[in-house]
Amino acid sequence: MISKLTSVKKMYLVNFFISISLYFPVEVAYLNSLGFSSMQITVINLCLPLFIGILEIPTGHLGDLISRKKVMLYSILTFVISLLILIMFRNFHMILIAYFLEGLGWSLASGNNESLLKDIVNADVSKFNKSLSKFYEFSFLATLTSSILLVIITTFYGENYTLLLIVTFIIRLFALVMGLMIKETSTNGKESMSNTLTIGNALKAFLQSSETISIGIYEGIGRFQFFFPTIYQIILLLNGFPLNYIVYINFGYVVFQFLVQRYSQHIIKFFKRRLLLVILPILQSLLMLSLFSKNIVIIAISIIIIYMCIPLKAQITNEYKHIYIDDDNRSTYISVVSFISLVFSTVVFFAIGYIFDHSHFMGEISMILSISIISILCVKNITKLDRKFE
Image (cartoon, rainbow, N blue to C red):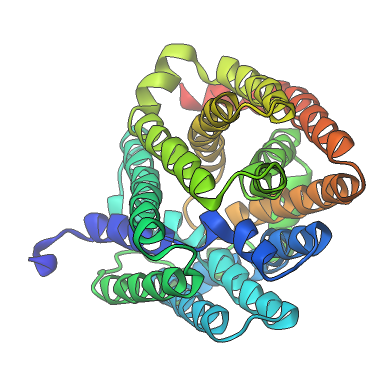
């Protein structure tokens, strides 16, 4: 049955399997249970985007030089090894090594997997955007599946973090099997090496465009979903709320994220890209004020809505990135944008984490102001690319 699936559907399934994680939704609670301080948790948490950012350009360039399918398989292998380390070790330094490998995996996958999908689809912008939306829909379906499994396992087995890691490890093996079955149709590699944009030229092209600089910064400040648990989970745990509350909130926002991603094309078409780029970060910032409340219902609803905005922002910024660059240079150029956004987000959120470690109140306020102000300043330049959609 699996062999009869098209390569596009197999790509969807690979994205589904690698996006399933029963660990990261409760990452902060797990690290807190090991006795790490909030600053140590912030360092571990932000090491992942930092490692992805540092490795983003060289690994992204590989996708334009060699087989994009091979790069995808290498990324899955690093995920598997990372999980093995997390299963076997509990100390700070080994966890950092595991996060380095996880970062290496995502840096290999970022841009490359989207470019591989573009090669396989081989269609116009409109059809590719629909396939890209479906590709991300499977990511959110994976997150929804993770949440369901997380609820079941924590209900019957309690805070068994090792079991969560083992289940995730097995699922990543499914991704490896599925990836091996994909037929690559791209012309990248040796045949197109002479046409491939060098890393230096890609970076130069990026810096010469105010539009793509703004996309990188907007995307960077919008990546707070990776850091946000460091804020809200610690606050919930300090206020005496059990792990189950965190699991249920995670399940709630994942369900609605999936629905939003499923209908993202319709939502974007109705509200328009420019309006959503402005309104969404402002809405997210205002809802973060709910963390000052000790009412779990208000906090839960606010967190769910905050996360509902994320797939729309990601879909829009990814459409802008793909419309800007040609096929031969796609992986390299997208990796440059991702590198800038990840490094930028790491620096900003590390500073916010440092402030949060000294004052929870000031940490929350600095995060609220950073997200809203920086996002609004980027929108004008980003929307100059609207003409390319015409």
